[in-house]
Length: 158
Length: 158
DNA sequence: GCGAGATAGTCTCACTTGCAACTATCTAAG
DNA sequence: CTTAGATAGTTGCAAGTGAGACTATCTCGC
Image 1 (cartoon, rainbow over the protein chains, first blue to last red):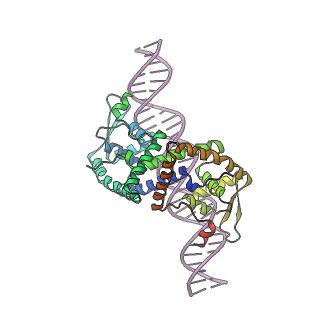
Image 2: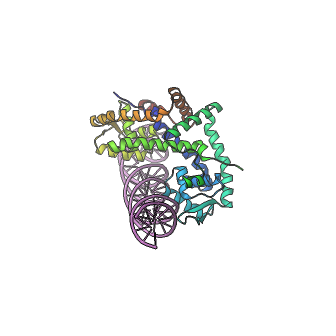
Image 3: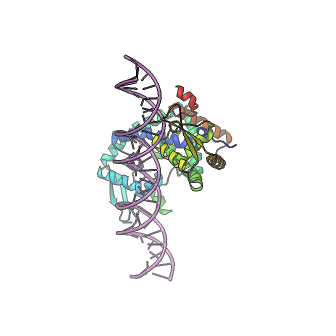
């Protein structure tokens, strides 16, 4: 008789762990900076790059639905954390970038998040962390989750 | 200047991977058997055990909100996949168990899910799978995610 | 027993999100 | 050019979910 123990079932464990870790982290930026997860993803994507990105690009990078990104962008624009300019080359899309204020918030936010990440990974030895990251990478690859997307310029060409 | 690359940020990666794997799996049981994730969790919890469980117990095991479990239980009752009987010892709670029909569906469902799990883990060597499971376990422990809850009888005592 | 507080389960409300339709714009074929 | 199809972004709608109120029941201290 086939049995399946949820607690040994990797898909369930990954889902639970991902949800739990996300919840723990999102408290960090929601309570303190009023950012929800989609908003944080937009900030993080823009913060890493110096060049301006389109909403579509952010959606692809973060694997988040474009309507969700659209709403996050609207909210961040209202708070003047990001700015957008029409792209003269293609007037359907907008180029998004952090404002000075947005950059300042980003800079303030990051250290706390990296610290929380290290806390969460604190139960693993340095060797184990490396190994865990490597195995995550293999799973991501095999599931076709883009890990390090090319810069926009390249994507536009392809 | 602090930077954070989302694609190397473990909380984001875990969230994305968990969501992706869950989505892939839930297609397996939603499309074919009409079960959504909470319903599947109820089935899985009841299917593993021979003794009947309370809704509260399932909620704790699966770390799912009690109102979500309540709705899943209602839906499964309507489809006669589970049955419930009042608990004479404590008339606030109900004892839930799979019906014969529910058991049959469970038995039919499990092999496909285990196969999908193996497909997902297929990119890892047996050694790596063991290691991955071990590291997951350490993370779960450190985050206080119960992995193998005690049987109800024990829980009631505590 | 009796009342205060805890607990199981249900239900309503508010919020989030994905889907799909829609507008505006671009690209390519004829 | 013109037209058909693709694409960027927005918005209305419906489904799912958590918080918390609520009811019924239990437990414990007095």
